[in-house]
Length: 539
Image (cartoon, rainbow, N blue to C red; front, side, top):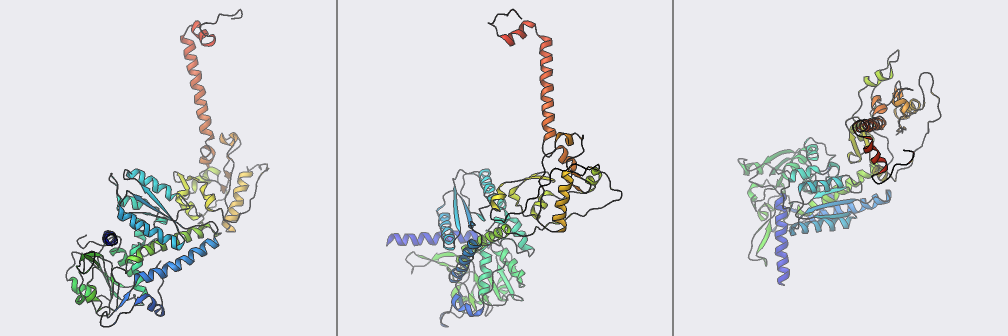
């Protein structure tokens, strides 16, 4: 019995630490589907009028419902894309036991849904550079669809947590903490990942069936991971949003005007019942332990809202625990599944979003070099994005050239094979129209005019084209690779290899001439015959 009480006390403290870290400090400092009213009865707990006037919005029950839906989506994804398994990588630095508890919760939730959860444990001696390198590897792993870094970082060295969260690729940032995803949310672009707790809060509000558009919404707290993002979400749901914080005046009056009240300030039972507008929806994000002699552990968990009072006034209210908490892990799983679904769509056959550069045709046709230099090349990173190559699959050499990692072949291994057209055996015309010009012209026709995903593969220039003996090897006219001088002189490295070989030979000859001019014949003979060998008769 003692061990059970000890575990309960330990677990309560662990949950308290976690939620406090994720809730706003009052001294601070896309969108889930709505559920029809006929489903609400299963997801909200009706209390007797003498106990609670409003309905309790059970995050535990709603999380179960969402997880069941995600489980079906994962099964469908695996069926449609054989070999694809949604994968979540959880990176932990150190051995904090409270972090271990939360990670086990995430791994179990992932397993229940069908997501592969990978727990990467790094020692306390991990430096910032080492952690960044690990994230770089995960960013480049096409089998990983979601990456989270468990906070706080338990390292012996100083690590910038903001730098770490910003180093997770935005397309894998299922925690929604990358600045790019935060910025997208701020401007109403909900194509990025939304932080898990605010996403869960919005789901809870929608499950009540209340109309968000036009409602007065008040958010207490402005943290990056709860207060600010839920305010943004409610704003883009067309609510009129007020954000309150430690400097807000007339806080009670601000709360009293709210049709929807979200409280995330980390102050136990701070919001009283007489602060709340009758029939308001109240979402309590806080969790704190307060003394309670009636409990075996000597304490109980409460939220930021005085529940007993507020529940007599509100139409819907979340309990603590069992309200917002279960939704956080649930939405982490949802973001991971969405990332895997996006990866699956990128693997399916679809036309590139290729934006063609316009040509400025002239008559008479200028020289090849004039045509090449008159056209401004598209940034290679932009081109890669248009044709579906991930940034982690691209090694850029300036703005005009890049190498593509062979890992893209593994990612697209389930793609239907295309058609292979070989252009060869062409004797150039007097105007220089040979294999390269014909090849590029065919690719232009297929991609630009027929809208087919098409790319060209060209052999490296021979030494004739490199030195201008037979003309360039980049095509010609309006069917050429630009910048043409890069292809002819720098792309394959031929001219650089020749230059290096020439310099090496020149250095060898220079050294030989110098030594033979400054040393005696006997010394030169020693180099050839050695000190013990007698001269032969034919010396």
